[in-house]
Length: 342
Image (tube, rainbow, N blue to C red; front, side, top):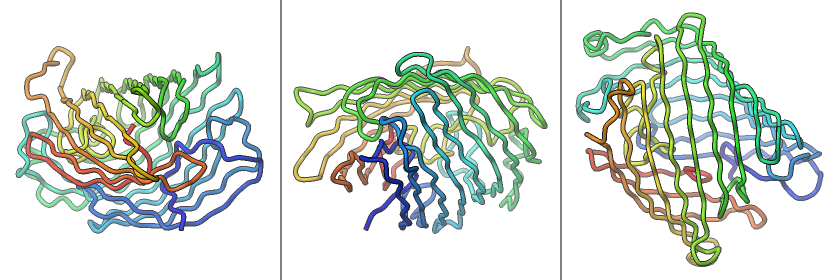
C-alpha cells in the first residue's frame, strides 16, 4: 500500500506517463495527536522539470483532537517557471500559552481557529538554480470556542475578532540540492518579504537556509537548517511566528512559544543502517523575541532527539519517519511524518 502525504518535495518520476493514486494518509505530533485521512495524487503527463514533480494533491484529514483540514495543492514546474499553490479550509482547536519565551507549560487556554486561505509562490528562473518571483497569501480567520477569555484579554491581544489577511511580496529561491526529497549534498536558500493589507497591516520577513554534506560516503549525511522570521506592524496574534512543531525545533508544541521574531538552528545526522532503514540524531536551539533589539541567547530553547526512517519507494528517496524529541524547557513528543523536517 502506497502512503502519500503532502508530497511537496517529490522529485520527477521516470517517463512521461501521468499517474493518479488515492491512499490513506497519517501523521502524529504532540499538538495534533494522531492525524488520519485520505490523500490523492495526480501527476501530470509531461514532467518538464526533472528536479521537481508537477502534481495536483487533494487532501482531507481529521485528528483525535477534533482538528479538521481540507486542502488542495497544485504544483507546476517547467524549465523556467516554478509554481506552488494551496487552497485550504482548517478547523483547528489550538493551545494559547501567551506571548514570548517565558510562558509556562501548564498555563494555557484553548480556542478554535476556523480559516480559509490560499497561498503560494510563483517564480521564474533567472539563472540555473536561481528563482525570483512573488509570494502571496489570502486568508480569512474566525476565532471561536474560547475556553476562557481572561488570559487573552490580560495579554491585550490584537486580532481576536479575526478577519481578512491579504499579502504579497518578492521571493528569492536558490536550490543546488541533488535531491529534493532526501538531499545528500547542496544548498537551499529562501528569502521573502510579504506585505499584508485589508483588515491588518503588517509585513513578514522569512529567511530559511539549508545545507547538506556527505560524511565519508553516501551512507552518512549531515544536514543543518537556519531559519529567521520577523513580523513588523499590526499583525494579529495568530499570525505571530511559532517556535516548535514538526518543522521548527521538534520537542516543543507548535504554539508553545510565539512572538514577532522567531529563529532556530537545527542539525541532523542521517545514517543508512540496513536494507531500507536509516537512523537519525538531531539537536537544535532557538528562541522568540518581540523586537530586534531584544535578540539574545537568554532563555534559548534547546531540543534533541533520535529517529528512524523507512524508504517506501524503490526508485524514490522518500521515507516514512518516526522521531522522538525532548525539549529541555519542559517539552517532548513523538512525530510520525512523510519526508524530512528539512
